[in-house]
Length: 260
Image 1 (cartoon, helix red, strand yellow):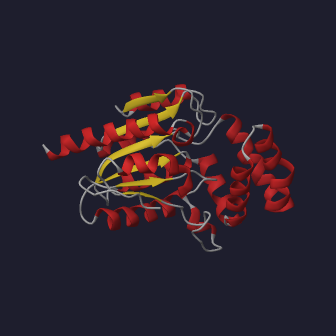
Image 2 (cartoon, one colour; image 1 turned 120 degrees about the vertical axis):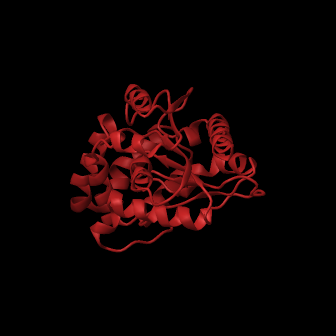
């Protein structure tokens, strides 16, 4: 999902979380593109409108990170590129940054942590792994996911989209990526060795990795840290203008340092 705008600055690649897709960034794309750069949001392999094979090895952090490398090099066309990973997308993009094959202008970890997911989302992931082989996606949606969305007051049209997206996902991809987010190791020591400008951005009410854990990760990485007021696990959805403004400011500062 490319944004519009005149590409005067280095481009950016946005990578969603496990149950997400490129559409998770719709609310920030226009503002980001208006900053004078090409901005591309993607589905990862096996998500929504991007198909994937029936091979679990295609959905590991390393395999998906390789996809990010390839895409970043295509979009960047030899120039540095800004990289953003949301939630599980942060664990995937981290693989691409650490392997060192692509020149990244900056790296943003959005609502992600240093290692495996914890707390209520960990419990939800383990429940999904137990349910999916037994009841399938449709029953899981009907008995748990749709009622939760309705109870949270999600609008009908968004619920319809969430259902369509869930049913389009690769079940093997979902299962494998869930195992990956539940077992990810801490790679902060390797990441800091890369030396890329890093931003840790998360909502003050994040129910994924605890805000305190993400703040501590920022300290370990010598990274800039932005806490988005009022936002939960998806600041690009919950507070798009605040999130977009933080990204543009960070990207511009990183570019200025690299160009000087």
